[in-house]
Amino acid sequence: MHKHDTIATLACICLALTPLAASAYVGPGAGLSLLGALWALIVAVAAAVIFLFAWPIRRMRRRKREAMELEEQERKRRNGQAATDAGEPPSAIHRQETGEPRTP
Image (cartoon, rainbow, N blue to C red; front, side, top):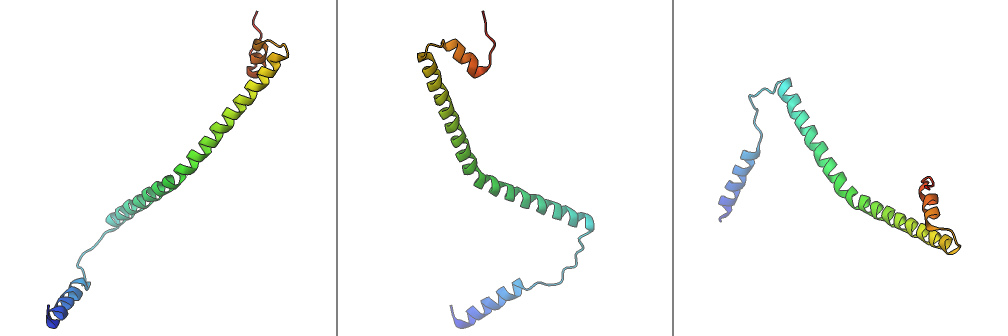
């Protein structure tokens, strides 16, 4: 391209991007509708971003809680095994852990 063509192209682009006065009226109903839709879009995107970042944290907390529950079950099982070794019947240990009433 020649220098004059470049200048003419830039001039056309600048003129095309220059805002002109618009002979339009946006009433309050349309304006409020537009603002409501924009607000809903912003809230939806924000919620998506929050959930995207919260997902790994929730997963980590769930795995930690499951590991603690498994450890607690293992500890109870070992304590039950120790009580069984001491001569207490397993049914009594189960009643102690669950709070079930004694059956005949």
